[in-house]
Image (cartoon, rainbow, N blue to C red; front, side):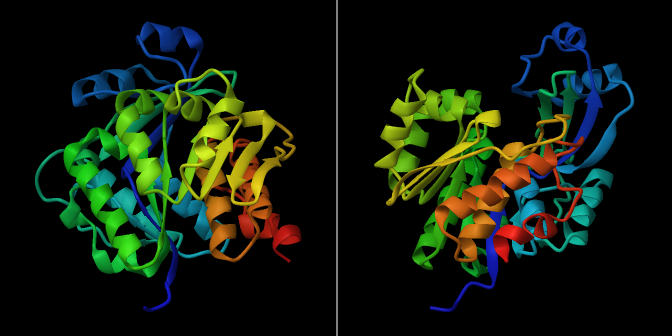
Length: 330
């Protein structure tokens, strides 16, 4: 069996983010659940966009953001996600390829437009996402090249995709392909509301198909239907090889065969926008894991990447993570 040529291959929603500052009153007036990912249709997407003030548009999507972080560490990544042959589709593809991420999914010539997510950032730095999934939701198994999956040391799967039957089939197909090639499979729970919608399937997936699980405190406690984080930690220990569980300013807890590792949060100078913090934690952790670092050091890289991204608007690094991480990596 050949060695992998990429550190990580990620499969997720290909989305262009529209980031805008917003007061709590606007979030309430629009009828949105603050701090959650709200799925909207094309008409609602247009209504929300019209209500926003000045905004920044940039390529996003949870798993694609993780790929960007891995590239910033100096790692190699590939991404699979569906876009339409429209302007936003071209923007998404260009942004990802320009940072060195391998993106070869052919743009669809029919169907829904490229996905976009309006992200309202309130003064407390929390983000409320209003996502029109568009073409991203039409991902299907044929969009996933098996040779690309076999090229990655880790296949990283985005829980948000589970809402669509065809995309769910693509996830299952990708996990099976990765394991058949002797590769690891990682999965992120993505959002507590996503967990609520698919708890039983997610539990079965974590227990039977996932080697590395990423979740925040709200997501992992939702998965195990408990208000006690420690109970959730104990439950997940027996279900997958590694679980990396983030807790915002309290850092992270990582479990593996060696036990439970507490990872402190990296100090920051200011909290601006939490968008992408979990995505970048996954980037640092997976970069470390695919480069032979011990699990605690992987957690430190994750915490460092998360700290960088919350100090500015946007879900992708603005400073070289490789340079920031030099004291750990060297």
